Image 1 (cartoon, rainbow, N blue to C red):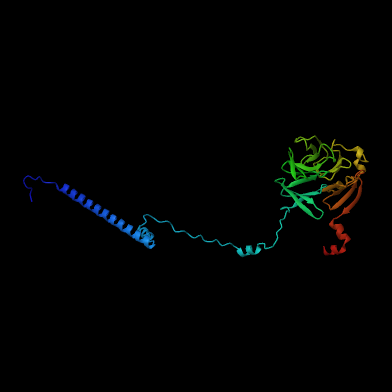
Image 2 (cartoon, rainbow, N blue to C red):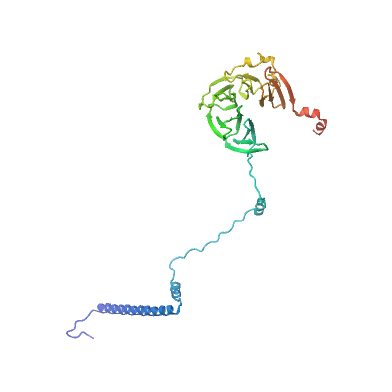
Length: 354
């Protein structure tokens, strides 16, 4: 109807907003009354449950939790990792040790190239991979004592002093490692300006200076060092042979060194002066001796060993012959021929099967 006189017309927009406000207020009051009644009912139920000893509240919470919906992507299901099959698994299982007692091997992992015996009841072994091992001699058998990685390259030389207290090794890395045998400890390391060819201790038991002779692989020079001085400089140096020295052996009874070069020529010299020891031998010229025997046979020297009393020394060579010399005269005492020709000639049966 149209507006009556004296009453102004109310806009429809305000009426609509008023109605929405009244409806919202009515809904809120209804909800509050519902929560109040639910709370009261819950309190009554809890009192009854406490009185009866029942526990139904967790079920309500569980139902409420189950009624809630998760929003967003859920966690990925755990993927079960497949077991990788091992090839030849049964072969490995069969190879497992099953003994009641186990042993550990202390042997070298590579070819043993050097062996030296010490008078202090030790012997030392060196291998091609640069490892050095000390072994203690026992009344029955041997006992492993200490292991060193002496060089990264193969051991080229191993020498033990006359008293058995010092040991040294050389390699193509231009270094000399010196060890205390009794205490299993490395004492000193020398850096050389050349590649060493042969090495030998050249001092008597009781000497103040433990001298060490080192030859140059590429020249004929021999250098003498004082290992207790801590210096890398030699005491004395000299060219002994016409070519590089291959083997050296010290005769402590006569204080003389016997050396050989690649051509098989043998020389005598004093470690103090590096000269020919005229007072220690009974000859003046090498032509009066058999020291050219290996050069005449066109062979070289593999090793030299001296007897304990210093009267004889033995030389081994690649021609499978062992030659024994008198030290004073340089004369050849005996030759042991271990060649295959002699062996077959002495045993016709072997020659027939050859």
